[in-house]
Image (tube, rainbow, N blue to C red; front, side, top):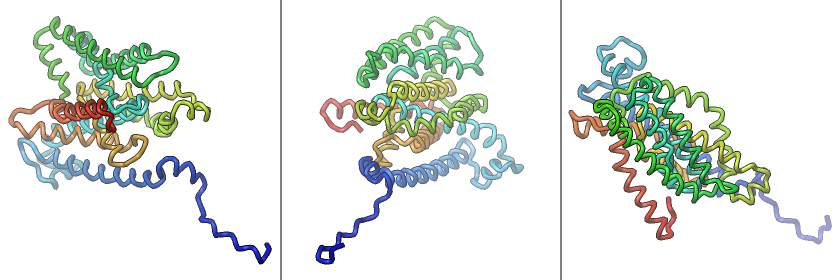
Length: 358
């Protein structure tokens, strides 16, 4: 080096892939924020679960609840272990399933209005399930699987009608809303044609209820989440490519149509199984992903935070549904709808006025 030339300014060491990280709005730092948010959600969920097991017609001390959970002999085994724990477990599982399903479908549609209960998936699952319940075609143990079939069929029809050489997000949502309206009408037709007592049970189920939920309702949802664990890990990575614009993703060699179809399929299966376990608990799949995205401040909707948020919403709503109007126990779907409907209206208004719809 020529001593007369000024020494070059020392360069700041940058980790590999710095440009990509910066382009993603600091995704490395936000990944850490997502972990912190997930820990906070987990802690809040643990507190709510403990309160859920303690509070009821008969108050159970936290120490007695822990004894039951640890398998120790306790006089509160019947109240906690037989009545409250299975119901809470079902709430946790369906809340997590709805949260993940909403995150995946909103990612594909790039629209916060796109959730299984808006675009016809939950309505398809509900229509076939109510038809089976009303006409006694199947046993209650098989309802989650009937619900899955209905949700998959509805999603396939929406996907088919929305396809025009590719999947357009706006068309996907609008056609889904149309199918949702039609499937609700079919469900009402089933209710008017079936046995009166069974129709009354079906009406309660349609509001989304955990009343009487036991381990038999939790098993299909738990197995579905377990079997889909590996595909969901793939989905968490695939979200990044789907969030890009189509030209960029295609230039990078991403087969967008296949990736979108895979993400939608995972979301539909989770939403349909959760619907079969407790009915269409409305607006959980709409609310949970948006709350998770806003709290983590990420461009993509984090699946883990969406699952935790969905579980927290359902368990907290069911706790309030049991206590607010006791001795009457409201279906959990009544409370989630009371919160979710105003949020949906807000999204629509902000979208019409050109505001940021989230």
